[in-house]
Every structure is written in structure tokens, then in C-alpha cells.
Image (cartoon, rainbow, N blue to C red; front, side, top):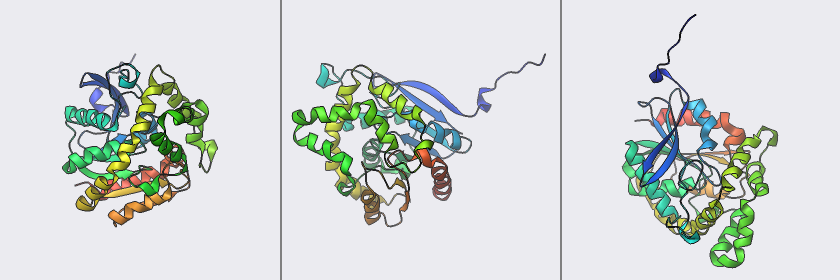
Length: 300
């Protein structure tokens, strides 16, 4: 009988790892050749790194990919929120600091970043502090302009103004029905959207204490809007290569927000796709093609 041994250096596909950072256990997915161009994939709400699993599978033979779960998301540590009796402050500043420390711990200091939804304000904080780290940006429905705050963001805006009164409305965004809608709303072909996507998102939302974590971050999203001018200034000054594969039917971050990037980055590459918020659910092939072309032209 033939015997087979496994040479782990020759294995392909996505690896699933955990690393200690600032007293937290951070889960992350890693794939691809370490000597290839690196993309750091920063996930959105209410997802985690699993939203990038199929993309990583498709790119892993030629691109080095790193996708962390933020604290309070996915498989990473979720310490109790300071607003729920714990000692961990769930703010975008704090989460960005943790992800920055994660990258330093891994020795990742030259990369493209793929930013989506919550990932945009986390990534842009890091980019503003370390512009020399950023080789290019793939902003997929990752907003940086007030004009991009779509109709589904308006209850969140009202939450910043009337926190107590609006909390029941915002809690409605944490329900299974709302999570399903995030994936299906605006989809051109809903039958291509895998229900596993929203089912896993909801699984994590339903874990003890996660509701307060999400409420904290949705309330703190106003801090991102306050920083939009600074991030726009960073773009104007540094002119990073920018790919914008944008779901034009997104009701959270609208097409006008995608077009606004062109004011600061005239060379940005905008592709308006006939889909909604979670572009990869039904436009994976298109995004893979766009990334291959973009990375090929901009890798130093």
C-alpha cells in the first residue's frame, strides 16, 4: 500500500490561525505565497473574515492574503464591552489600534488593503498613520464621504443624535431578517447568494454580548464621518492606487460615495456593478478579474 506524507510547505488553500495581540486572541485566515504581493482584507458588519473565504480560495495560488476577525467578531476574543460592565472599549479607534498591532506582530508592513463597510474606517486609520505601508487600496463599498451615506444609514445617523430613543430601531438591524436583507437587497440574481453567508453572520451576532458590541460600534460610527476630511486629505497627498468595485444598488453606501473618490483620486478605477452591499456574494468572478489586473499593474 502506498504511503503519502504531507509537506506543509507545499500545501495550498486557506489556513486558519490564532495569534495573541494586546492580550486578545485574534483569529485570522491566511493564504498564498509569502513572497507574493500581500492583500490585507478588512471585513464589514455584521460579518467576519469568512466573507472573504471564496475570494481567498480564488487568489491563493498567486497572492498572499491575510484576513483577521476584529475583536468582538467571528472567532476572535470578544471581551465584554465597557458599556456592558466590562473593560474593553469598542470604538473604531481602538479596533484599528488592535489590527495595527496585529499587522506589526505578523511583520506585515507593505500591502494592498481591501476595505469594505466597517473595514474602511479601520483601514484608513491605519493608512493615515502609516502611508508608507500602503501599496494600493481596493475599496469595495467602503465609504469615506458624507455623500455616500445611503438611506439605510439614516437610522444610524439618527442614533447618534437620539441614542436612547433610537436604540430599539438599531437593535432591529441585528435580527436575522435584517442580516438576510443586507445580503439580498440590491442583488441582481438573489439565487446566486449563498444563505450560508447571512446564517453565519447571524450566528456570531447571536452570541452573548455581541449585541452591545455592535451597538457601541454603530454609535461610534460618527467618529468615522468626522475623520472623512482627514482621509480625503491623505488620498490627495499620497495618491494611492485605488480600485473601486462598487455595488451600485447598495442602500448603505451609495454610488455617489463611490464617485466622490474621483474628486480626490482622479486616477481611481471605478467599476459600478449590478449588485448590492455584499458584492462578493454574486460578483466574485468580476472582482477576482479586477484584482488580478490591478495587483499586476501596481505591485512594486
